[in-house]
Image 1 (tube, protein in one colour):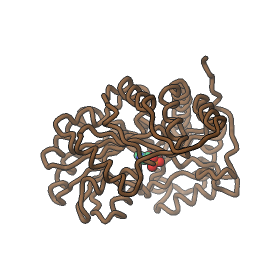
Image 2 (image 1 turned 90 degrees about the vertical axis):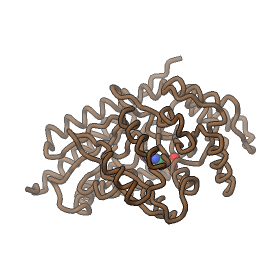
Image 3 (image 1 turned 180 degrees about the vertical axis):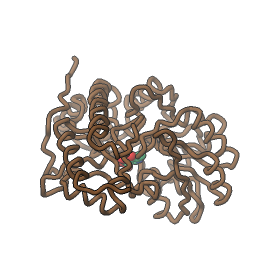
Length: 390
Ligand SMILES: Cc1ncc(COP(=O)(O)O)c(C=O)c1O
């Protein structure tokens, strides 16, 4: 039966422990990558069924769960997986941290792009590895990998591991097959392992094609891991749970052993059951959510063009996050952030994503239109009071 979802519904999330809605005032949150939409009905039904059953004992992944993962990735992305290629992990960020011990020793150099989702940098440093960054190049309003710089940094710092964000957060790029192949060939040449965070894979917008890194890794599978999750796709980040994919038997064994050291290889009952129902029955919700989000992206781009043409906007190819260059409106990052906070709207400060995020902001448009429009009006009002730079 077709369910028609109402993404215009405003659901009060205050006082629910929501990370996003943490305010005591009237602020509109357009920051963390979390949508203000109810989850897909099959997911909610599954949670209810589990609760109704009433016994919440130790749980292991079922054959049907593996099948749902294999089918989703095979049919959508031609990523051919077997059960042996799949491990579970409490989150993609914990897996990023785990990968330090799989591919590197303490003190080794790990390369990430700049800008990048913050934990890419913090996990490297917290695990006592050396953080090396390669700035993305902006060409005609989109980020590109600077392959020459990447290779130079790999050689200069003897990089052992490259953490790739595919699709990219915060820039919203969906790296093309050609770009990924070029990157792979550099990493192969210098024996650098690649961990590809693909949590935004299912949020690829129309007109773009997501390429799972593992589909390119034949002959180099012992050095490639991809990390993904149903949580971002289906807006169920509070459920926690993710997957690690690898194609090399010895590598999978090594990762599994590393996970067992801290007993971090299993998910909770709700995560397993929700993951399966999401992959089996969530497609309809995802399609409708994304049709709604695409209209929010268009609305936002039109609004900014009309009212704030001095903001340089990067049109996303994936996700509901829009990367804004606000350098016309501030000279320092704290003032930029505070100007918006004072207007009771919160965006993510670009500087959190690395030096390339200087005077940038990341705007999350995955919310009901009425909230988004009010948020955009507040951004407009905040910047209207600012005397523009240069
Ligand atoms: C690129 C990327 N990786 C990982 C995460 C978080 O993953 P998890 O909640 O599974 O740790 C996010 C959340 O926004 C993200 O954007």
